[in-house]
Image 1: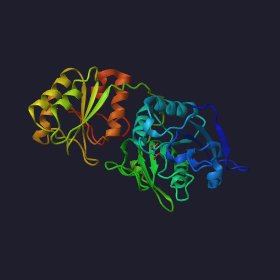
Image 2 (image 1 turned 45 degrees about the vertical axis):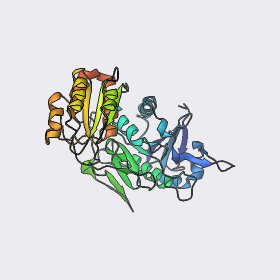
Image 3 (image 1 turned 30 degrees about the vertical axis):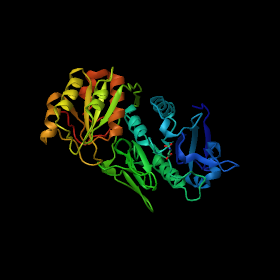
Image 4 (image 1 turned 180 degrees about the vertical axis):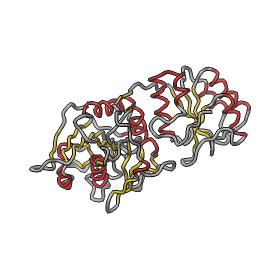
Length: 358
Ligand code: ASP
């Protein structure tokens, strides 16, 4: 991460209405064509040339960029730590943050940051683009300008949206509820189980009742240890026992997320249930999340999930896979297996509608 911060006061000679930091990590957003037409990452110091409309926002912008901007397919937990460190370092002097990130893993990063930034009282808004900023029809400009508006927005009790969110294609979504659902159209993200926190049209309409507010004494505390010895097993009709066992017998596995059908159902074939039971009895945390983007896991509703509940598989409620993976890695890293078992089915940052510990 480059230590240098570029400051751009778009309010001069007036006073800025807010201070917002832009963190550029890479992705399609910042691609521009070089002399030979090849897409290369933008030098973010020159953002005003691409987006002169920024001058009208009356903000003091600070821009930091990853030393080497990356495609978000290459994101690792140490990048989440870098982003959280930047937020922590500049937390006092900024009113909000906009993180520019590739769309492919944006929902994982936004989920991770929502769990890392405990006591957050300022907006951390992720955005990106489906078309590079250098393209005439790019969605980058609208996404960035509205994300900045949201990061700067103030309400009666401080920041209007003191949460980790994704703004994309006119909707503001809670970060740990969002999923990438579209790779072509501009509305790339969906949040089936939680309403948008805001919709941007002629004006930005906030759904205040859905926005989480920290208590008046909330203090930022950053959690940053991840244990990535976790796995995901998506079941399907005809799944091969050898494949399932190769996953469940992985040495040193600490957590497994089972992606099941509907409201948490799985095959009741004996070999499958035995493989999962062995895992649970070895102390591995097994979390049941649904392959359905909407609705929730209710273990015991059907006979095909009752045994999972009985053997100690934990119901993941309406958590997204992205939230489940990042939460499990963070809980295992910070607290170890005992606490992870207690905490994983309980909402940490608004990622779950109901507590569904089974
Ligand atoms: N592959 C790109 C990334 O996730 C796609 C994008 O930016 O939308 O970094």
